[in-house]
View 1 (tube, rainbow, N blue to C red):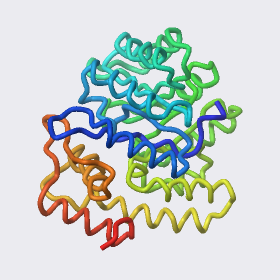
View 2 (view 1 turned 180 degrees about the vertical axis):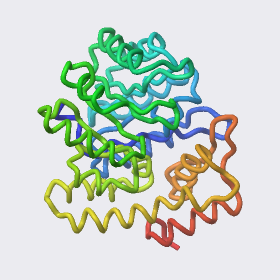
View 3 (view 1 turned 45 degrees about the vertical axis):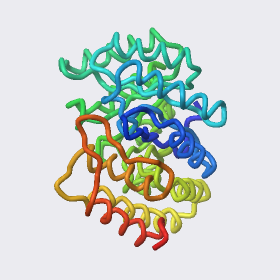
View 4 (view 1 turned 90 degrees about the vertical axis):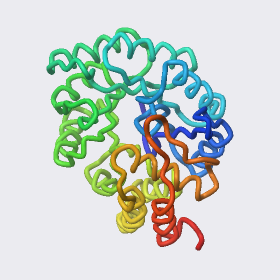
Length: 306
């Protein structure tokens, strides 16, 4: 599990104006992040439009990413779905395509309790040879993964790690502490862009920030500073990244996925990485004054020349 550490961006999926996968933009973005020194890539996360993609589109995205990346960095595949058997189906595809690990949430829609969630992860483990990362994202699946459950699954070898996008920094700190006490069975990653410095101070194994699609160099520099014990650089880099993350909050009359991933796509288009900031249906692409607001943040933070 030592290969799962550092900065592992959840790759944003570029679309053409016709709503198809834009493979040229996809390659530019992936190559740009690898050249910046990221430690892995997470394909089909929330930023990767997993919830907006048909099974055929999911496989197309996974296949394209693997062809682009080859064996340059570890690849994690999002196998996120409403129930266990569908997650297992996605895991089989990831196995076939040569991915290094899968990422799964708790089951959702037909909500169960902790007993069902534990059984969900154990059944996935029985069905795949790939390491499993539990994705803690209660805003989408309506349940917070308890720390004691995660530690138990880690000690039993069911899961290899956790991507924590809960926004609960206290619970994450307790999870890091409990993981240390248990002998570090889990690789623990924060999925929050603006509190990575705090996660590193707690002892996190890395970060999975969507904003790293826009500025991978800064997240890599921050990770390297953390490894070197250069906490001043960790802090000052976080100040820059926190200011850059304002691209998701300066937009007006748009919220949720349209504001967050929409801002990432718009920034990538302004930087010349993406040809389009097209969003999946029914989400509209950002335009007009919202694009200018994002441009202003990019210029102010030095990411884009004026």
